[in-house]
Length: 284
Image (cartoon, rainbow, N blue to C red; front, side):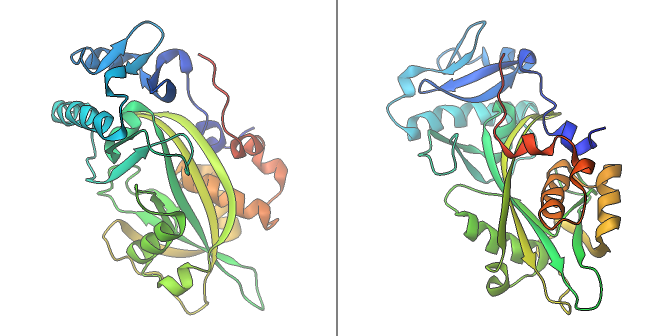
C-alpha cells in the first residue's frame, strides 16, 4: 500500500481542470469551477471548452502579461477567490532556468496552477557512537498552508530573483537561525515533482531536496515566527510520523528521499515514490 504522501503528491484529476496557456505554452491548470470567474475579463482571457488562454495581445513581453494578470489577481483576492496573500513575486516558467513569461503574486500560483519551485532541507545529526537523528520543525499555527503540521528543519518557496543557494541561505536563517557558512554545506538530493489538488487550487511544484549535516551542539532557533518548535528525533520516529501523515506532503517526500539515499529505510516501504522523481505525464 502506498504511503499517504506518495498518493497525495499525484492526486490530480485533469478532467476537472482546464489547461492555462500563455504565449502558446501551457503554464498551468485552472479548476473548472474557477474558469467562470475569469469570464469577467474577456479582454484578458480567451476561454473555450478546451482551454483558458491569456490574450495574445499581451504577447509582446512579460511585463504586459504581468500587468494584465495583476489586475485580475487583485480583484480575485478581493473576492476571496485567492487567499494567503504573501507580497512575494513568483515567475511563471515551466523550467527553473527558463525565461519568465510573466510575474505574479505568490498566492495566485495555485489558483492558476502554475509551476513553482521550493527547497527542502533534511537536518541530519550524525554521531560517532549511535544512530543519526533528524531535526524536524512544526509549522506555526498562523501559517496560511498546513498550519501546525510537522515539516523539514528548513523549507521554503523560491521567489523570483533568488537562486537555489540564495534561497537556502535565506530560509536557513529565517526558519532555523542557521548561519550562511553552515547553510552552504547543504548537499543536493533529488528533485521531487508534485501535482496535487488543494483547497486553494493546484500545486504544481518542483521540490529541490537537500541534506544539511548539522553539528551535535547546534539547536535551531526560528527567527521569523513561521515555526512553532523544532525537535530532534530518531529516524524510526520520523518514518512513523510520515506514515501517520503528520508531516506535510512536501516534507514527507523530502524526508523519504533522504532516508532512501542513506538506506535508512527499505525501498519496499516507499512503493511508488520513484515516479515522483520525474515530471508527471498528464492527459486531459
